[in-house]
Length: 73
Image (tube, rainbow, N blue to C red; front, side, top):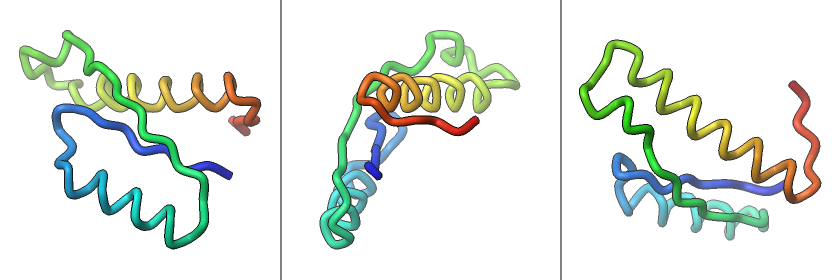
């Protein structure tokens, strides 16, 4: 198991620190990844949350697969 926290322009620093502290307290390996948010959300489209979440979760899945983790979906 590995915890992953994404750094984006919309995540406050205190949340990232909280994630690091929780992972350390639980003894779980933790990685912080910085990703770019899709330019497509700059104009605040109706589906902005979908576009952003798709980018975030695609990055998590790609990282997991590159590191030999199996994703069960």
